[in-house]
Amino acid sequence: MKEKEDSSIAMAEGDGEGVTLGDLKKKMADFAKERDWDQFHSPRNLLLALVGEVGELSEIFQWRGEVPRGLPGWDEKEKEHLGEELSDVLLYLVRLADVCGVDLGGAALRKMEINARKYPVQYCKGSSKKYIHYASENSGSNGSTDEL
Ligand SMILES: Nc1ccn([C@H]2C[C@H](O)[C@@H](COP(=O)(O)OP(=O)(O)OP(=O)(O)O)O2)c(=O)n1
Image (cartoon, rainbow, N blue to C red; front, side, top):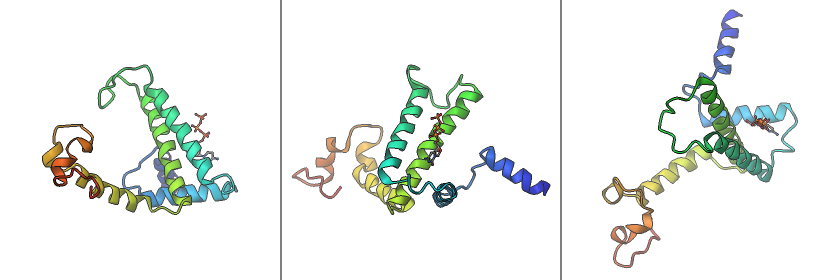
């Protein structure tokens, strides 16, 4: 019994090592089902909820100017709040993909392959320019980006 309590506390405290998109998808589906909330989790509602949470995430950074990586000077409470808002965005995104029938993990891997083709290391290393700035070098004489 003690062991069970400890493991649920660890989960509540966010020991997320090894958590998968599939785990989150199932937890969100169970969460909605238990509450009879499938009726509210339509694609459009979830998209609006997601955008709202992106707004809440933005508020954390609002007016702070540029924030260095690692968030030096932020206290634990602020970082915990950030984790919560990031999680809300992730959870709604995972749920949105699920109710749309999109395999989010597979789609993300495929998109990364597309990104890698669009941004070949030899053209874009050290540059943050959009791919259209060097697409012509990468796709033949007509500058077409069709194959990117
Ligand atoms: N119909 C709902 C309502 C909530 N949630 C879940 C997903 C989010 O992770 C979180 C969002 O809850 P709130 O709408 O209460 O938003 P916050 O947690 O951001 O609270 P607040 O708006 O007070 O900051 O709960 C959900 O799945 N479906």
